[in-house]
Amino acid sequence: MRAAVAIRSLVGGPSLGRATAVVGGAVVVLLVALVAGVGVGSVEVGLSEAIGIIGQRLGLPISETWASTAPTILFEVRLPRVLAGALVGAGLGGAGVVFQALLRNPMADPYVIGTAAGASLGAVLAITAPVLVPALALGAGTAWLGIGLAQVLAFAGGLGAVTLVLVVARQGGRSNMVTLLLTGYAVSSLLAAAVALLLVSSGRALASVVGWLLGSLGGTGYPELAVAAPLVLGGSVWLLFRWRTLNLLLLGDEAAAGLGVDLVPARRGLVLLATLVTSAAVALAGTIGFVGLVVPHLVRLAIGPDHRLLLPVSCLGGAALLVLADMAARLVGGVPVGVVTALIGAPFFLWLLHRAAGATTTP
Image 1 (tube, rainbow, N blue to C red):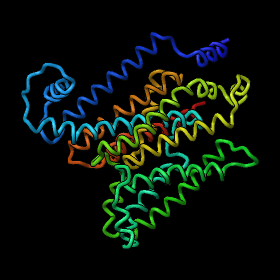
Image 2: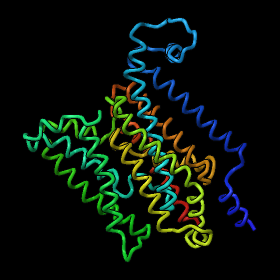
Image 3: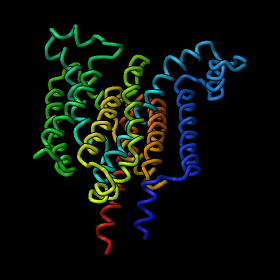
Image 4: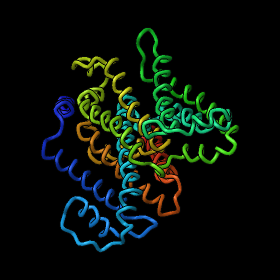
């Protein structure tokens, strides 16, 4: 009887009132993070001034009480960086939900089947190409459609690595999630070794390579946002419409197939969508870890496993977390934001391992 109620709940989704309250609360948290992100930094632009500048830009009748340079700092320096943080955080949060559901493992993250390793190899190749082959120096520094070669190759590398994993893991026209996970681990290790070899040969480009691998939102402008936003937002919205399939997969393969889910194409489509979102996010900001691990798990603990709420709230939560983490990174002297997320996520991951070990040893 309880199982039947659970199935009806997962298939039907939450009530409109609960959905409005939960998603509305997450939107408020994100708005607070965005305002704090554009208002706080090494140059003094107070929160009230930031709100006033934004309000005036929106056409509200607000008297100017700030320095003449404040709007430039706000809109040309901080706003694109804050929007990039929100975009990347939202993409990683949503992709994390999908991979955790597909693998039925709360310790899975968006990089689990090789996206980060492939993107890293692409970006490091672009950065080190002028050092290894000086004749490529002219081409490697140019931009295409407002984005650099490192971003283009990172995006291609992420998609290429996952495509390779999907092809290798396929056996007899099918692939199960365990094979996919192990293949992803092997391919990631191989690509990480290639990145290590390039690091040894990177010479004067070493600082740029390390900076990219640690993840950073510094230097992100509107052109990069304009290229990445359609991919991240479009893919995330598409994932939001797949909440029912994700809910049914939670019931197990047999139950999901019995309720009409064609398992192989459904899983393949979800993996490709989540990979597209992850690759675009990594191409924009580098390999920022733990957002796609921490946020979905915390949100699941707070509101339950129903993907109709879990997906949008994880996207909003990931956006808020990365905006706040980047704000903290700027305040402590401009360290890469990936360092801050690692300081948050690594203890959380250890807690997850401890919790899982406790669950398996409890009689």
